[in-house]
Image: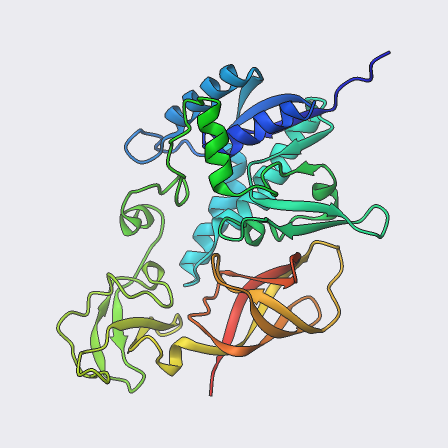
Length: 371
């Protein structure tokens, strides 16, 4: 008597990655069910948020590869668990990463719960990452993807053992070029579709215009480290550390670099209490360089923090790993870098690695300037 196939519910976004992942699972003998998640509906229109087209693409792909697909609305959960926190962080002058929170709260919590209710044995996504069962029986490790340029373990660092035990990442051993090639060979309708950028509730709309609808803001002075006022900011929430474009100083040229040219202005610090935005000239200004950081809301893939010592870390996505000394600070994280890091930003995630193994991380709270 034939054994029943394992049922996998895969999140299908309408993009090429999740589409190829669904096909790969079917080829591997799984019973595959696609699930399209609708996470935003406040102003779901074709101009900025492509949900309707994404659903049509996902349904068309499901038809081509021969899997069932359904849609589920997580807009309420998203607004309560992700968007509300996103706004709180921006109002406090920090720069959050909603993709990290969305993975932890929606794709691997609300989605996972829904999939299990459908009788799934496991779930799958089109993320570029890998899961490996460690030598300790029943323990699972989150690994970087083979394609280092597409690795998304940074966004997945808050996943826990229960989530990893029931998750498949079919693309973890593939390069993006191979995924595109498979999509083209299968003649998938979205084979040439561009990768999505940003988050749906903002899309391509002007960021300040969007935040203005939800946050209160107060203009204030832009100052140099020496206390010189060089302009007025429109609200601290609209700026991020290291930002160069859109600062709005214009015409202030007080410092020349070695070539005799005026250095660009960068956002360096925010004084939330006094509503002051500090700006500096020059990419390598000391105020933009950090020797160490502290992070809170620590989350560890293994369930417990690693031993203090030498590890590597990322303080932003697409950043190369940097050597650091890690210390467990009782629920928070202290990192000291081998080389000073540029524009370490409160609200972003500091993610720790041991080689290819993603250990977890925390939310950056503060940093210490390099000497």
